[in-house]
Image (cartoon, rainbow, N blue to C red; front, side, top):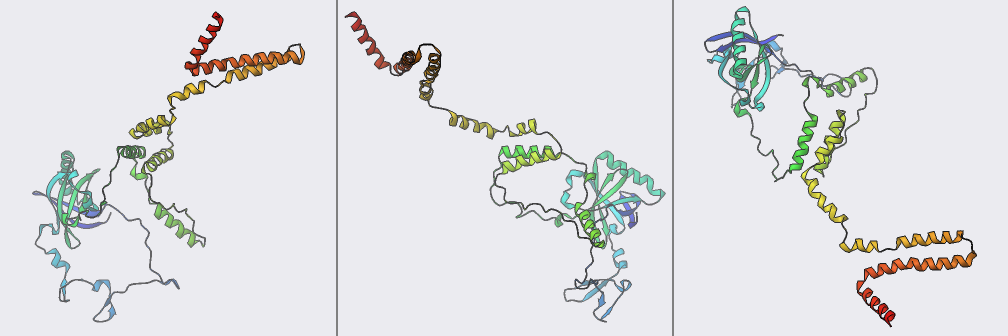
Length: 364
């Protein structure tokens, strides 16, 4: 890898010659500006406004524009002669736990490569010291015309450095959070936890840039004179009306995408306090008044069946239609008796006088 900066790490009185190389690379597809009518390239020309002519890169330097519009030329020699120790040195100023670093401060990433054989021993010493201490080194260095803040940590057998923003360069999140009072229920948090557990962890090396791949397919198709492939657009997301239903559907979809059976696990997710409290209301709607069961039991369903069975049996006996009618009459009166008993049970006040009257006639 090509180095972009040469210098040394200052570790107390120990100096470690190093080379700074980029730890990341950009795979994004770049486009050129063209004239849409004829496809001609649109280029920017660097022109000196005093001479009104185009100049080459070798003729271009740096300059600071003052408040009155005048330009103060600044050369690379001026910057390299700055009276600060970080001009060519990565100066370690402290060692702190890694969780002390706010991820918002992280910017570019570099590898620090040992420069030559003499740097091998002190380089390895610093690497092993960082490993054993479980801490990171905070350093200051100068790059591209400005002093910067960095964090040194161990990656495999190398030392990596992350550029850090200065604390005053990180903006406070004012006006970002919702300004309305929102209450999140325990049931919603339970479903959110279930969704996070279902999604689980992932190997970051499996992730890839799908957008770049789709752009490459479009470029390949148009280069071959073919129509670009059509990709189905996702449905526009509307306002979430039922957060609980959305969470439950998300958990279900996540499990299905992973090929997991959702039977027992779904039951565990649905067993929430909200469901348990809703159970009594269901019983109330299905419950019946106390007198309803007794009233339903008084319906003469069995005598009706007995009448039908009696008619069939009478028709099968010898004796003609007369005997059949007589028997039917007897059975019908007999069938009415249970109904009378039922009505008697229904109104016990009328039943007692009837018995007394009957007993009086027998005694007479």
